[in-house]
Length: 251
Figure (cartoon, rainbow, N blue to C red):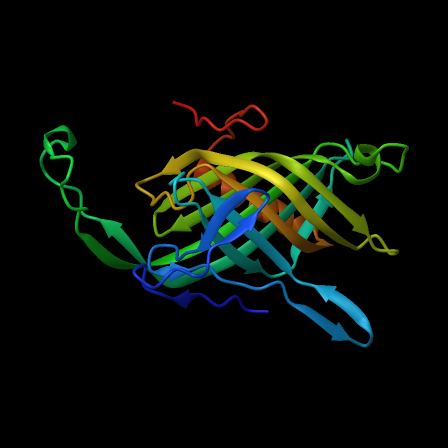
């Protein structure tokens, strides 16, 4: 199913504030583009189908957290010889409008404290998005909640806009179930903490430190997993080790 990006002005009236796990958030646009989606549940032949959706709660502005959501097509997964799981999702490039601030020519230190915000310019570019979940151990049913339902995983959310790219990386709890024929998994990112880690060019940092949650469906396809991971490696370079749950990006 194609993903729709709805263009909204950043000056649009914010949605009614809500509360999730003690943190206030409001709906927001990504620059002039809202990465918007809904968790769609359809009934087909009596079966309940969950589409892939990820929610990002941004703490870039701690006093005004913003929530972004996006819907992806079903992902792909593969299992290596060590029983590690790679699960990937992709939104192919599509044209979007991004709003960037025009930075002043003078030093920021010389700007008065009450100076108005810098002017902004709108530029049209191609944007693609990737999510990579790497599961390090697969729990088996046991006597504790963690043993039966949680999984340690590293998670990457990458935005590529034109020649620029930025990755948000960290760790979280993921759990999923596998279909009877072992070809499909359905699961949830219950909680993950991500920070900006790798950049290429001069990307717009849309999320800053953030939390990620969501639901997903993926089908077994090793070739597609390898292709996407190779593309991420070519664009971002070698992975950077991050302490689990760290909120401080590398210097």
